Image 1 (cartoon, one colour):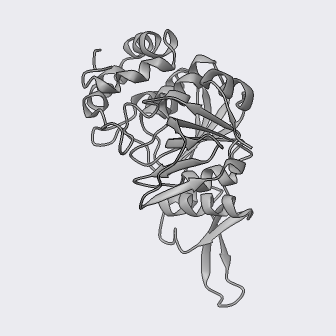
Image 2 (cartoon, one colour):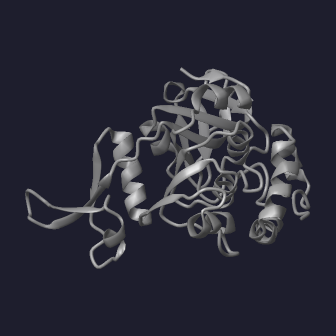
Length: 285
C-alpha cells in the first residue's frame, strides 16, 4: 500500500546502486524532480530504461549514475543529440556505458509483457531491420499455430519504476491524464514504484483519457509541485521549450555541464521546481 514520503526519503528507501530503473512519461509528466534526487544521492551502476530518453537521462548519464541504457529513441526533442550520452558512449566520460537499442513497438510490448507477468513479448516486427545484428536480446520464434516467424524480446520488470502524475488522493490512488504513455505498465511490472504528483487531493476528479493507478500498485507517493519541469504536466504548466533549446549548449561542454548541474541540481532541493512559473527559469548558461 502506498505511503506518503518526502522525495529524499522515497529515493533513499526504494532505490539502490545497481538497480534497473524505469523513469517514464511521454512528452509530459517526465519525472525530472525524482531524477535529480537520484543524482543528489549519488546513485551509481544503474541500468536506465526508457522508451524516449531525453534530458533527464542525459543528466543522469553525465553525472555518472548509469552503467547501461535500454531505449528505443534518444535525443533532445526538436533540437538534436544528447551530448552527455554521446560523450559516455564515444569517449567513456564520466564512465563508459552499455546501450541496448530497440524499436518503440518492442519497448511498448516489453512493458506490456512485464505488467502481465509474462517472461517475454511476442509481436510482429524487426524483420528486415539491422537491430537484431547488434542486439542479442532480439530473437525470432515461430508461432506454434500458424508457423509465422515472430519477434520476441524480454519483458521489462524494473527494480524500481518512477513516474510523475497530476494528482493522488489521500488513500494513495494516483491519476495520470492527458497523453498516457507506458506509466501504468511500468508501475505494474516493477518490483517497487515511486510516484511524484503535483498535488494530493480529496477527490481525483477523473476525466477523459485518464488512468488510475490504485494504491496497491504504488510503494511511495511524493507531492512535488512542478515535478515534471522543464517538461510539462497537462492541466498545470507548459513545457519550457527555451530550456530544451538551451540544454544543447549546456550539455556540449563538460565543464559548463558540471557547473550547471552543481548550481541547479546538487546545491538545491525539490523546491527548485516551483520555477516552472518563470518562463526564463534554468535557461541561463
